[in-house]
Image (cartoon, rainbow, N blue to C red; front, side, top):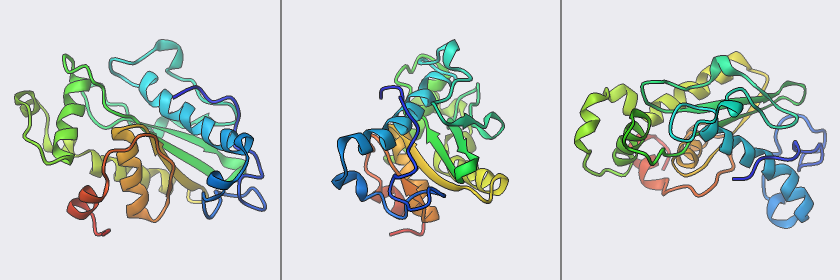
Length: 205
């Protein structure tokens, strides 16, 4: 994902710019400029979920970075050094908008970040686990539960904010699972299959 160049404009599908649009259908029928202004910041957040968190893709200048027009809420974010589900939290309080960006898979399995992600991926896909998964607790590898917990904490901390969920790859899958479970919105990048996990892990069919 490329870094965002602008924040979503006030005309992105909602009449008063307060909260998120009721539907994201406008993205398929609007202008390229409108699409870019809405999607680019979310792509930037998805990118930062890799470069601002522990793991193979971490870059020090991105650690506390945000995208234009948004501020990070680090106290709510998930970034366990020992491996586990990782996500960043972004806010536009004046417009009652929030975004949680879940990180995708760290493909370097020589470290705990990639190993935990690999194990979580295997659990979500109902595959056999690599031997190194034994070093992690079931709680650590239950990325769906951790993602839902994070969404719950964010909603409790900012009850006036409407939340949208995003991410790439594994992060996209988590974003869609959380959104479906909560009846919220998600805009994601390259998500794996979600329906089988919904049927196995949630009450959503």
